[in-house]
Image (cartoon, rainbow over all chains, first blue to last red; front, side, top):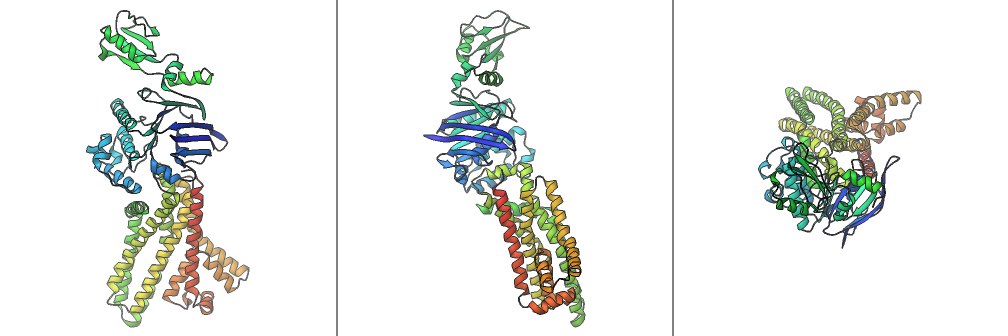
Length: 292
Length: 271
């Protein structure tokens, strides 16, 4: 079943076209990355999908027309905005209480703040939280009412590495629970392996809609693995292996799992390995040049 | 779904230091009124009551429009600038519900602050003044709340049309100055220059919500309107019986028109 249908959507800011004739559809329970550089139209598209911005074209979410049945759409969709804008003079508990009241639902702090690891911050004011904590509180608000779909706009933008890893874990659980999820991002880090679809946007246009495997094939250099190793490594799964420089060897590969297991077999100390995920800019340049 | 938003508006407004100051001023004025009224008996007592009531009316006409328009005028644009409007509008609510909740929340909070001042005085006056004076007092308070309700609608319209809080504040101050001072000057000039008839003067008075409220309050105190001059007295003589109905209708029409206009603009705007 199609959960999200976007048909010929365009949006202008004055004379500037922010979205140009965008069309795609996503299945119920799918996990989609909306990928593109800053200013590519990701936030505008997500806002149109919620009915927050006017647009030309048609968007249907779970069969509800966004323009005509906005309330029904928003009942079924949780939204995490790019910039966290919750009332800074409220405590986390008051925020949850207020937004659950707005949705007309009863919730416990365990199931809301607990789910995003903020239970111990229940009585702390929003203004006193770190950027990452505010982002997680905002995620807790987006999850209120157990919505069928989630639109998450740059959910990792204010997070440190630990918060990011924890939040990716939350995303994984949400995907397993069957929610339809769209995450807008300008990096792929940690998300590509979870994604069913990747929609690549640039300057308001869809450059491509692909499966994650296709992305890895498209990007000329996919994963980079940095290893503190003094001697040459031979690995058939790698595309390129640099000579050791300053004690570091760099391996470029598309097949991350196979290369990592090969390295483990070679007895490489995995605790010193650094993995750099595919570079979105390379993908966009390739797609813009008509390389797919 | 209106109640949680109304509750939040009330909570925010009642913590607003300007609203608290407004309530304190009203309480002081209300208690002064009771004190001065209770000083004298008979003729002296009535004179004191009338004088302090007139002071109260003047204060109301300056404070209530400023309070109502600034609380309402900064509400939508304030939330828009802070980004909280995006989060609110991403909830299963219609824009009409959001606007109406703000309207009710702000109006009720001003009404509560006003009632606090008037109520303190009414409690003090209870055993001293006649039931007639208390009715006058309640009429003035009701008009004050109706004026707040009217200008909250106008404030929300300003808020939806403004592009920044700074711009909203500028429009609020200009509107306040226009309704209270400039309009009067224009009206006086037109009345003399164009030799307006009393019906025309009354119409021009009635279409300004502040003037409508002024006439209503003074009419409650002195139905002859002599205190406002010969033209007002002539108006009272001719249409005195229906004057409160006409002026109340004008304020209600203002409220409805500004609210509908605010909602129309709000609905056609992004976020």
